[in-house]
Length: 258
Ligand code: ADP
Image (cartoon, rainbow, N blue to C red; front, side, top):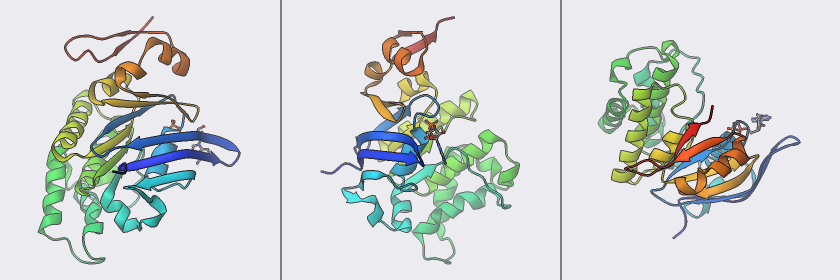
């Protein structure tokens, strides 16, 4: 069976600046993958290539077919994206933004049906954004807006969710809420999740597979205990840390050395 999403020998440059260098990655349906790496290592670029927003040299295949062969509408039924920063310049309420995600599910210009409203409502309940439904999105705090953008992606009911630092603006409770929700959807609906992450400890707790980028190359790809070692963190981040594996999960936990 072909991978849900696969890239092979990716090469990507912004002008003369090489950003991804021979990156190959096969993502199976139902995987939950955290993409790690220092600032500028290529995480956002990789996610944009995986979602078909940027074209790169090398192959990108979605369910075995080249991603270029899909129409925009087809793609948005399969892949939902939570970008790093979503600029919304027009006055839309949170509920309107979430409902827009349903556009690919009905005829162009047709009104939303009960299934669309229901999907929007459920995804807002799951992200604790119901109380924000009638607020203008451009007036929300960074974290509130981020939760609305996650609700919007979930309302798409896609099979693959790509998220660029989804927890960046969130307080601790909502960080855990979002990762818990991802894990639940992953287990219950086999949602495939690929997220660029900064918090190595949260990544280790919630993501069974981690891909560590360094300067546009995959430095390590594997289980958290294989990827997050004192050596890899020294090599890739240039920081001395202590890594322990506390009970009960025994996932690596990183302590900064003062
Ligand atoms: P990360 O998400 O890991 O921080 P990015 O994929 O955003 O990394 O960036 C990788 C490199 O590409 C960085 O050096 C960044 O400065 C550069 N870069 C990103 N976007 C652009 C762009 N639009 N034009 C030129 N360079 C870019």
